Amino acid sequence: MAEDKAVTMEALEARMKSYVQRVDQALSSELKLYSHSRFHGPLVYSTEGGKRIRPVMLMLSAEALGCTDDSVLGAAVAVELLHTESIVHDDVIDDEKVRRGKVPFHVKYGYGASLLSADFVFATILAIAARYDDRRIAEEVSNAAMQMSEGEYSELTIDPEIYKLTWDEYLRIVSDKTASLFETSAKLGALIAGGNEKEVKALAGYGRCIGIAYQLKDDLLDWRSKDKVSLGLLKTHSESEVVGKMAAQAQSYAEEAKRMLIHIPRNEATIFLEDLSDFSILREY
Image 1 (cartoon, helix red, strand yellow):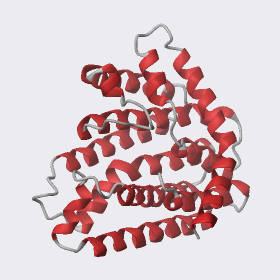
Image 2: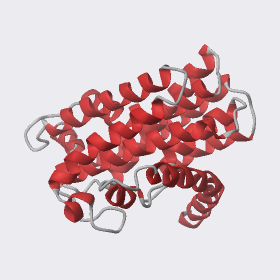
Image 3: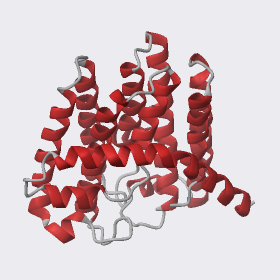
């Protein structure tokens, strides 16, 4: 069974490769606009590596609705930059020592640079959004940033050793801090492609479900980390119950994401979106 999973993951990552390369090229081009800035080197460092699943999801959502040109790349870069900055801040909050196999941003550049980089990143995202005639692009990215901040702050203020976190509270935090950017990524793809109201809503729902499944899987992989807010669930349930429920719910949300795609034209990109739901729960890192 483990061997089949490895083959499946390898195949999925191979199919993502061309999309990831396009994102990386667009990201590099965007950052080169600021090669004169002292933030350029640190931002290049912070964006190295990563799965790029959010921008890939954005590109596939647009492609599923018939948009295959480079108009999606700016928005794809914007969501990846927003994700990157959230990682920088997460690592500060959690005092991480390793990120993607290397020294975290705050260790290499300092806490001050970690805070200031957010201002610079948001300015670059604003510049990208301003290139789109559709004001909804900027509004959606802004809404995602606010929800992510709300989710992170909720997690920050909860001591899992003291507070008895309920399942609904846990899911609300997950929805805000993680699923909101997945939702925005898929929704932006639909908006840029000119999707109708039903298509935009379906892809947004797809993204949110994938985001929840993705974070549930993350928390399962990180379960032994003592400071994880999900540990608060242990106050009311046994560890085996919580782990079992998280695994089952991750699978359930991944399947729900697939069902959302019933409203989207059936094509190669849509099938790939279905497969990304499997990627969210099969990965082991």
